[in-house]
Length: 200
Image (cartoon, rainbow, N blue to C red; front, side, top):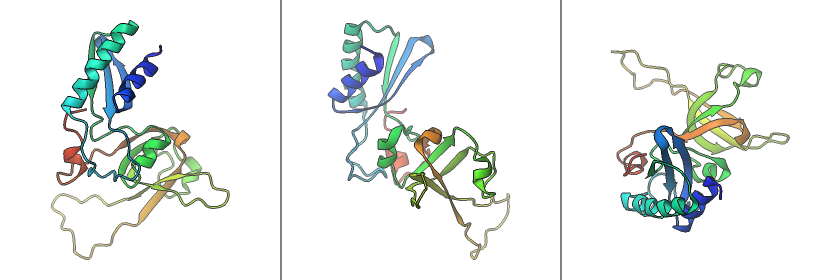
């Protein structure tokens, strides 16, 4: 059985979701797991609980057995939670994290399609994930929304009546994305503090 299929079958059989498999130097096999997505649950860190050390230990024991039975070679197995910069892979993940702050890297720069709104060679963006308003003939399903807040110079005072930077948006399709992750924003009252109890 292929490694991906074996690991996914084992992880989902225990009631978890497989996020990522990495084969690293020195024979390290790293498996990243998460709790299954409940469509009506908010994605802002207020779910019932996150992946715990006990969850990882349970999956590790079962995977060690499954990998041994299948004759998979590795030197060390590491099972962890996705962490606060969880990768987004596929439609389901984008649905799950609608409204969250994400980082995306496009496969190709925007070029002429940017229409002067952002640098034509730009490929990396950080902003809020949203559904695109699909006009007739448009193909983009998703969009990222952000504002280019001017950097404050050291010692510069920020006036109370300072103008708010206008919102910008970029529509995209999943096959245009090289990599997408939750933005690793530490918020001790929300997701940042609670999302990574076991490291990642």
